[in-house]
Image (cartoon, rainbow, N blue to C red; front, side, top):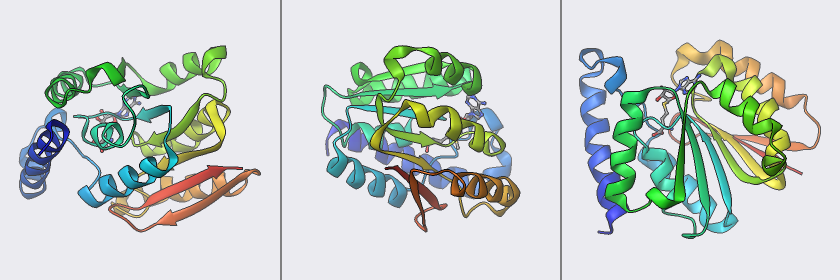
Length: 202
Ligand SMILES: C[S@@+](CC[C@H](N)C(=O)[O-])C[C@H]1O[C@@H](n2cnc3c(N)ncnc32)[C@H](O)[C@@H]1O
């Protein structure tokens, strides 16, 4: 097993434990990660797409980030955004253990503020090939709008938790209605893991 696969495997064991003991675990220590089949799905998609730059909103312990890193070339870069400092510490350790720290930049802070800054930079205009939204569900429409100008034509904005958990239904409905009104994107819900929305920029 390579180093990334080893770290993914240990995080999957932790995810199983989290599922069984959900109410007992402190919020700061919850990974709330994508499922393994979701990881495999994005890993396959990215192997085909061969992105040079990825942006992720919601790092947690870095489980999804590691699936992305294992699909892309060593010269490709991932920027991932997280507000919880304890989770950032775990994620950094996981990236080191997996040998991918050089490919990943963690931006610490509130995603809205970080994305507003990124959006102002000329360097980020139409620069990302793949953007993954997996943070606070009520902010998904804002994340989509601010990310779209940073996405290259032919790029993808993907979002998790489109089907589960049901408690997010109201926010997700708003997100889907919002993106359905935007021209020049083609969107589809894929029932893998907690449900993925894949939006392709024409
Ligand atoms: C569902 S988890 C991400 C899981 C991760 N993508 C994975 O699959 O391994 C969501 C993460 O987003 C972070 N988050 C939530 N709201 C945020 C915000 N406004 N700014 C930055 N991070 C945020 C949480 O602290 C949490 O770690």
